[in-house]
Image 1 (spheres, rainbow, N blue to C red):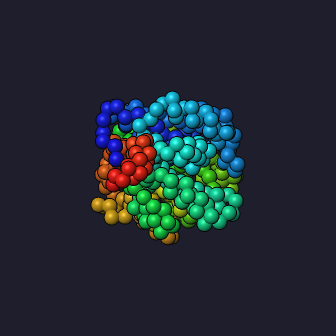
Image 2: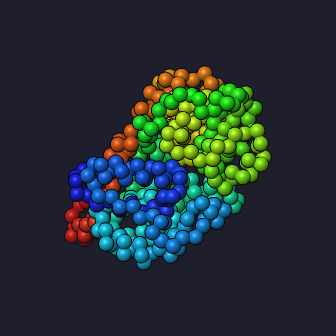
Image 3: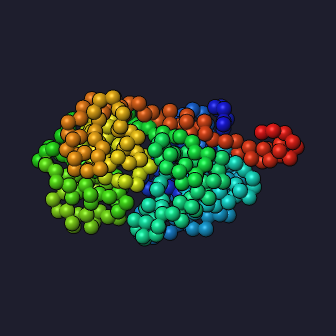
Length: 357
């Protein structure tokens, strides 16, 4: 474990980076800023520094093309004290290969249910993909996960050395605003915010028999088809900053239909704006919503029941619950899980010399 100091040089390698808009990018961007504010030197290497090709079935995601040689030069030029590999894509694979070859230690994170996403798009079973991911993360000194339920699930799948790492929310931006964003629509307002993609299961939300109006905020590969299939739904496209916070505030219930997220930062954003959440009882929602003080939403295998039940939640309790999640705390936990880059080399030398670790 690293001892906090002002001189650490922390390198994060991630295949998910700007201009992508998703939970991984928001998490890594905010953690980077928090670590820099704490006095650390942080470098992020993402696909924006390489030639890329669009990801098959998801062209909004750029995959780095043959990054190994250039990535190694970047790593060695930066001379990090600690290496964190955030994703399992081309950059993550290249960084992992370099670390394994040189004997340097590193940490990883399990941000995305890659196996379920691939199955949703191609039909490939999840079992062999999880076996590959277990191999990928097994070489690290620790794999960070966002929730206890995900930690339990991965442990049951044979993952080892799992470390808990929660998430945060910008409480200055996401807060209750005047509830007039959708005053022109019949109420109550049920909203979805996030990527508009097949793995988000948005159609399940849009098929629910609910009073009032449904709103979808976001963009993605499924947007055009959903707009065609659901002409009575309001699609706003992506919103950012205060406009996004006002959209949350203007809704009566935030409906989170995904069964495949590992956390769901949008859940915290909605709660911070005082908007209750309806969701399935799966990883992410059940970790955040269940056992809260006061009624902040509803989880149910019948999403329609959950959405209607969430109408009776306490908006003040929603905000108070969100205030438990700090990005500074998130960054401090991340820092505590990092390992010195040379720890594996030093450990091997100590063992060779007969010194106990």
